[in-house]
Structure formats: structure tokens, C-alpha cells
Length: 263
Image (cartoon, rainbow, N blue to C red; front, side):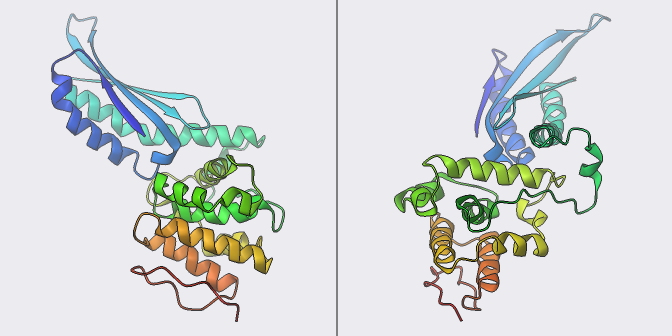
């Protein structure tokens, strides 16, 4: 996610550090879905003759169009804080709208209010997409799908191993994020919206032992690519072990797990 602050106002330089921190906190766990953020600061005239300070935040969201948020305040910091306070909900709402439109569900806005609502799309059993989605779960499990993880998968030729087109894996990660957003995801970790039942159903879509081992090897490599095994990644791997009847013990965070053996 690239963040640019564009303004000729001298105060913009002093706001940069504060602004970057505020934006990253506002978009925490959503960085993967936002390609670029542009912040503009400008003076605005009020009818009473006063001059206000306005902050405009433009977000280029993957899979959607540009989301724009405006706010005005007595100071630049006030206007900036007021704008960033709206950013998260506006991004989530727009992605929900796009995802529902893609599935012809524009007429069901009440779905988003259903407690525990789940609209994870289903893939054919043992399909490349079903297998890749489990790898994608590991990628987003620590709330940050970093480049090192994709690099590790590319070195293993993951797309070919799973039977995907070369550029298909990022799209599957994007699709998974959209599915989670349909559950009214707005705060906390994305993985918290994958309950035990959903996790089991996702794992059950891959029941071919050979494919399971491929997915396991790729998932572990992605999880270890950044030098540590996060709690969320561990949870996904543990679910795979349990559902696929691999070794009962979970991999230790400090060391890479060995190849699983069926029991």
C-alpha cells in the first residue's frame, strides 16, 4: 500500500508522520486490499467568510473503484483525523457492494446484518481453486500478505503445482478477502471471521491425499517465508493437520514443521 500526501501547504510536512501512522492504523488488516492512498490538503471558503481546512483521502481499492473521503476542521490535524476516522468503514462498505454485485445479490443488503453470515463461494472438490484457497488462508492469516510469501510460492512454482494459471493466486487471495468482507468484517483479524465450521468445510474441499501434501508443503513454505510462524498461520496449519489426519502436534513457531504423515 503506497501512501502519498500531496499539498503545497507547509504544515503538510509536519503532518506526514502523524498522517502515515493514522492511515496505517485505520487500514490495519486491509492493506492487501488497498493499492494506493492519496491525501490532499486544501483551504476552503465558508459562506460566513471564514476559511476552513479540508482533508481529502482518495483510496484506490483492488477490485473496486476509487473511494473518496472528505472532512473539514479548524486545524489540519482535526480535518485529517476526521477523514481517516471514516476511511475504514467506507472501504469495507465499497468492497461489500462490489462483491454482492458480482454475485447478483444487490437486493440482499440485509445479509450483511445477519449474525455470523457466511457466503464463502464453493469450488469443485480437489479443484486448483479449492487447494489454492487454503494456501491463501495462510497468506492472510497474519493480516499481511507480504511479498516474501509470494516470492516463496513463486520459487516453488506453486501455480503450476496446483494447476493454476501463473497469475491466478493473487486473484484467489483477493476473492477470499471479498468473501470475508461479506461477513461484515470491519475490525480485528480477518481470520476471526472463519469459524470452525467454515474452516472444516474449506479443508474438506481437498480430500485427495496427494493434493493435500502439495497444499501443506506450499502453505508451510509461505508461512515461514517471513522468518516466523504467526498465531493465525499456526491455526490454519493446525486445522489442516486435524482435518486431513496428519500428525496431531502443531508445528513449533520457532522451527519449520516436518513433512506430514497420514495416521
